[in-house]
Amino acid sequence: MNKYMKKAINEAIKGVNQNHGGPFGAVIVKNGEIVSTAHNQVLKSNDPTSHAEINAIKKASKKLQTFDLSGCDIYTTCMPCPMCMGAIRWANISNIYYGATSEDAQSLGFRDKLFYDEEHQNIRSIDRASCLSVFRLWSEKPNKTIY
Image 1 (cartoon, rainbow, N blue to C red):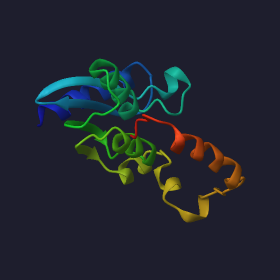
Image 2: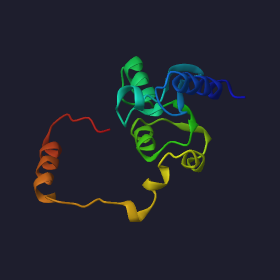
Image 3: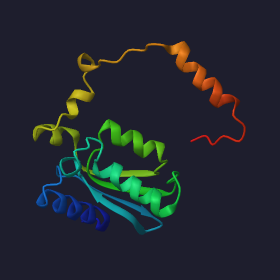
């Protein structure tokens, strides 16, 4: 068993045993060193965004004092949901290693399928012109950081 995945599994077990949330654990590694570990804390925090991957990213960013986690890898007990995948991509994490699949999570009652079904997409654009004014403000800002 991969030592980083083993650590992710142990994090997930810790979270399950403490009733913090589902069977999800994550580990972020850079240059062979563990930067952060985390598990799902949705139930503990009453925060639907408190997934293992998000928690690990927050810890790693704080520890490394950067939002850019280029050169880091993430090990997670399940294929990241769309929210976590987005966070992983925004953090520039280089490689993603996962154990269980989204189908495995769905079989336990987690709603992963909901995010992939077009019939469940209740998303519409409104007030685009007004919102673009903020984009113009950003584009005119000197010395901005693009991430």
